[in-house]
Image (cartoon, rainbow, N blue to C red; front, side, top):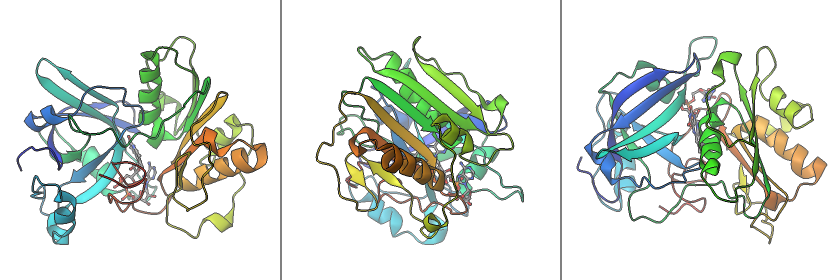
Length: 321
Ligand SMILES: Cc1cc2nc3c(=O)[nH]c(=O)nc-3n(C[C@H](O)[C@H](O)[C@H](O)COP(=O)(O)OP(=O)(O)OC[C@H]3O[C@@H](n4cnc5c(N)ncnc54)[C@H](O)[C@@H]3O)c2cc1C
């Protein structure tokens, strides 16, 4: 596939670093990455990965505006699988563009995992996949982090959101008049505390889950204990509610831009995030304009990996390319 202004670019694994038994950092380079926009800040910029198909080959996708429709029209065995990830780093140096992704190697007790985690676990230097990420000259889209005039930012997330939180915190360090930042990151174990180059006054708290149930440490960090709620288990849809977009079709507040005060950015397993949302919005009464809640994955559900709908969308929340 030739690089162009529309479709995915081919990423070639340049290096792999096992940060812990949970996180595997993979850096991609390759000629086609030169076309990516490397000017930050990236914050929680989402990207799409298209994994090799069942024959182990990357799908042949035309470099045209309707590349996505053409990709969807490919037979299943040729198409490969699309998943959503975050930019941990994207830099251009010495004429080479490198994009780094921190993959969670999630394996259930029975050894089952998903195609993206399996791909990351087996990747070697030279392995290839396709990346859908912002190109030079394209309008910015795919960033949800929007603190507006907030003077404090509270970030909460599980391991899937750790790369986005780390990027947000590091980007805020380089921002003048940045809000105060306070981050809580729930991870499987103590060894999963990663290095974040945080501003001096930032408070970053790693919350090893250990034997606790998923979401409990995050809920505790919010001063509240998560109660299981069976009524939320019926839908496979991810929670995605930001000041400007609601996946559930809930009416949006008129004041979409966060005001002064605290802005909450919360991402992780969808059921956990729903419960944190309920606590913050319904019980504490935090204004919806001050919060962004995003389900990054759903327990027991394989992601659909499409470009429609906010969570699976590389593009804007409204679903534009
Ligand atoms: C905007 C956005 C940014 C994201 N950024 C990152 C990122 O930078 N790094 C990252 O690792 N993930 C990230 N994720 C989450 C990632 O897209 C999902 O974890 C995705 O499901 C992984 O695909 P898969 O093919 O491995 O598993 P799937 O085929 O989607 O799922 C297979 C099974 O694995 C389970 N599963 C999926 N993810 C997890 C998990 N994290 N922990 C435990 N079980 C899981 C599912 O419940 C399902 O039962 C992001 C998601 C979004 C929406």
